[in-house]
Amino acid sequence: MAAFSLILDDDSPNAVSGKMTSSLSYLECLIGFPTVSRDSNLDLIAFVRAELAGLGIESQLVPDETAKKANLYATIGPADKPGVMLSGHTDVVPVEGQAWSSDAFALRRDQGRLYGRGSADMKGFIACCLAMAHDAVRRPLATPIHFAFSYDEEIGCVGVRRLIDLLEKAPVRPRLAIIGEPTLMAVVTAHKGKAAMRVTCTGLEAHSSLAPEGVNAIHLACDLIAAIRALQAEIAETGQRDGDYDIAYTTLHVGRIRGGETLNIVPNEARFDFEIRHLPGDDPKVLIARIEKAAERIVTEARQRFAGAAIAFSPLNAYPALDTPPDSEAVSFVKALSGSNSTAKISFGTEGGLFQTRLGIPAVVCGPGSIGVAHKPDEYVEESQLASCDQFLARLVERLAV
Image (cartoon, rainbow, N blue to C red; front, side):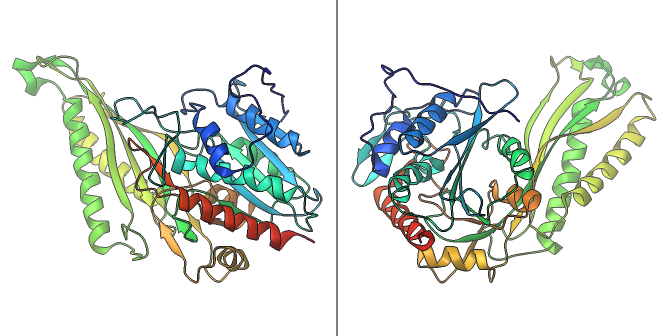
């Protein structure tokens, strides 16, 4: 996959100053790029690439099919050895409809908190990586440090897959990955996977005064949603459990539904989207098969009145769970950097499962900030969290130096 170059104009307000060395100054600049997933991240990527180039660090860009977004991959130290990959996504969620106290894309500092969209999720980690690079380039590293900064993570870990395609063909792959999602710098060894599906229900329209002569597509959807809820109740009662997660079992959730045009027409189509957030030991394909079986029963009954009744499934997105053994070398290494003796598990997903599943790279999640403030108005990261991440990365450089 070919790389491409980006150049910032010298008079750009976000042009490289050459003076930024702290994670705080980098975070202020990164938040200024409104990299909502629906929009391009190229200005931010160009800035990061130029900053690295100023330190003598080469980087490769891996674009999407439109060339309007890109991943960035860079290596500090020997390129012929497997190293430690620091992974972060550059995109953020929208701010429309949220009651922010100030401009979401301008860093606001108040009583030890740094406010701005992406401050916790997860530009704080990227800022710390850029600050660390100033130290890393001055130290001869026996083991390299890799930066992997992606796009479109927020819509299902989409963009990083193109970078993984590239790394699959690379002669040398990273030895381990540290995913800098917000964990309050706790060492996380596992997270749930996700499978998202769209369901389209087809019925037969009729005048609402003759409703029994039609087949109501919304009713088909509701019947299947009831089956999904029943499956969720069964899993919660008798399914696999892991008390290390906030929610100890696999969850099913219907998040969107649409159907009907006007009240006096029996609707002939309805759609809804559902997702499965599954424990590493649960197979979402098995659960989807059970839901499809319930759909067959619903459709069989509906076809007694209309032969064209149907319920169709189409996948929207999926990413695997992460399950790194707590006693593995990778976990021990990251625990030593953090100074922690414990590990945790999280319910939200990261790109770590893809790195582990597709590339065989063990992954650990550890980064500044709290997921509890992510995606909300007045998202923030504590200055103390940035400082902890700075210290964490400084210890990484120390460990990898000759």
